[in-house]
Image (cartoon, rainbow, N blue to C red; front, side, top):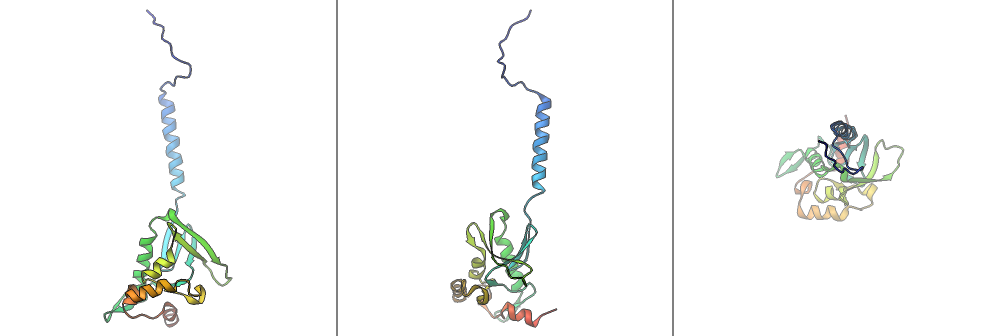
Length: 173
């Protein structure tokens, strides 16, 4: 005996083939977009490579990677410390935005003022004592942050150091 059931024409019927095709397509879309994820490599305390573009933070100068400073008469790796601080700061790649500041022909990197969550990365580096205001370029833009770090004896200001510029002059390879 046949029973007549009313099934509306637009009633979606379960179709295992359609379900598997949908899952496979969704996986392929996710997988292909994951291959295009942002990449970040920290070089030192004032430069990094974001999605293949080398960026130098405008207006600051951080200790070089192999540079050492002194605290309580003991040498420590302030350059590596500066790099580690920047690396910890930039953990959320998708929130980094940069505005190119100069287009100097001699510069091989893009010199930019960069922000994370709307906060100036260079200012955070200076305020934390992991970089200095590079007045030649910044014209004192980060001087207030530097003076605060100096007063609070934070980072490199807690001991003795030579400026990164002087260190580079004395340690050319």
